Length: 321
Image 1 (tube, rainbow, N blue to C red):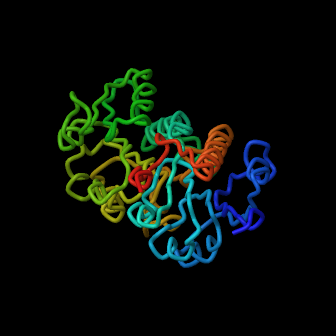
Image 2 (image 1 turned 180 degrees about the vertical axis):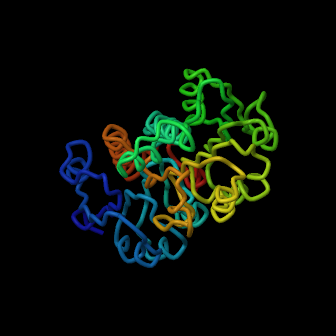
Image 3 (image 1 turned 45 degrees about the horizontal axis):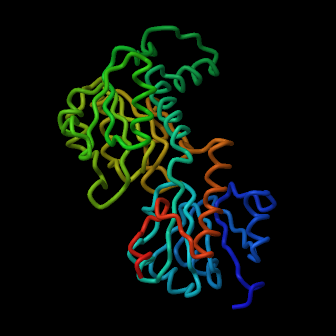
């Protein structure tokens, strides 16, 4: 493949094709940009069509399975903007000799800010009060009386970089912390956390072991006044069971930034007044988008130059092949 034929598929919608630290650097390296922003559903077959002939891809949550890698034999690197790799078959990537990279730490503080915002929005009932005022009401108590964060117990399921950043913020509000994480020496079991926490906030990656981590049985363990917050991955929660629990009053409220079948919502979820919903923007801000995009660009250039950063490689086995 000649120098001027090398192309980079870009599906990350925040990419600046003329940015000095992004698109301009790729073109200066002799790479041609193929822009195909992901703004909704995208099947693997479409990704396979888009990526064919590319040596690199800077991607959003596009599905990369074995059929996609088979369609792009010249592909050398998939740079995921963010840290989640549940949409990428890492084993298939390794088998195809494709390095998969992420941008660890680039949106940690932004994601923690959003998790705190979701906690406060649910507890202070911001969405319900906003709707009430827009209806011409002025309900300062009664059925719409808000709740406190100060003095409550917040349970963090997952205590990695983002979980710890959320913990620092929550502690500043005078809340008590519980954490459930197998890597944490003084953590508590999930069952204990669910039974004791007033707010349960999820910060674990999606895997076969964590899919539907919070289902009907787990929701039943939570106090009736508890609030569930998910800013990690939608598949962690059995959403039909959550809808049932919210309808039945098994738990008080929920705040969700992620969903099992994005951008589609589980039936009934959007009709519940005691749910705060945002469109998977927890890790996104002007600054975090710029940081992640620049770092993804860094990773593409590093891998193509034969100098991948091991700290950013999601399938390190490929480096040994």
